[in-house]
Amino acid sequence: MNSRENLVKMIGVLDLQGGVIEHLNHLKSLGVNGRQVKKPQDIVGLSGLIIPGGESTCISKLINIFGLRKAITEEFNSGMKIWGTCAGAILLAKNIAGEAPHLALMDIEIKRNGFGSQLDSFGLHAIIKPISPRPIPLTFIRAPKITRVGTDVNILLRIDDYIAVAETPGALATVFHPELTANLSFHRYFLKKCGREIVQ
Ligand code: GLN
Image 1 (cartoon, helix red, strand yellow):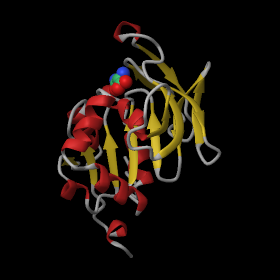
Image 2 (tube, protein in one colour; image 1 turned 30 degrees about the vertical axis):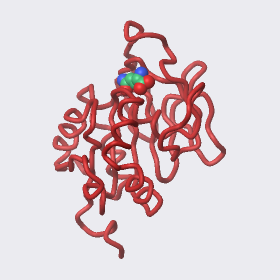
Image 3 (tube, rainbow, N blue to C red; image 1 turned 90 degrees about the vertical axis):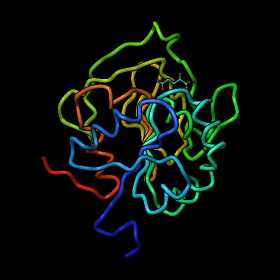
């Protein structure tokens, strides 16, 4: 049993910019004290890391400034799960339309601001069977569109001409913000992916 499989399965939230507190609050609602990740040593031993929404270019620059890229990549390659929400999904993508990729940990192609400007933000409900049998409210804020996924990537939600949720064994990408609604299904799902089953 390696340290990641121990009873204490820590979940971190990358705390550089964006919707950090909202993710921590959702984890708390599920009885999990998330670790705020600011330094490379904060990543060591995490079972899962959430990269929040915000501004992907800004978060990427801060990842470099704070020297976190190597630690994120190494822990991911040794089994830490990563969930990217909105800007976080952009950071995970191996391909970004018209731009160089950032962490490039997931074989997805993504188009930033795929719906237009901040004023084109919107909400909808969708049933995503692996996540919950009930409709989940989804909040899109200057959201990207996932436009293509690699053969090893599972599509959990496709709407119109885009993919909204994609997953690999190691990573989860959502182009919307589950931390901005009261619904805890996605957080519960990610915790399970990290080996922490929450029964409530
Ligand atoms: N439009 C932002 C970007 O490209 C993402 C927006 C968000 O995370 N809500 O980084």
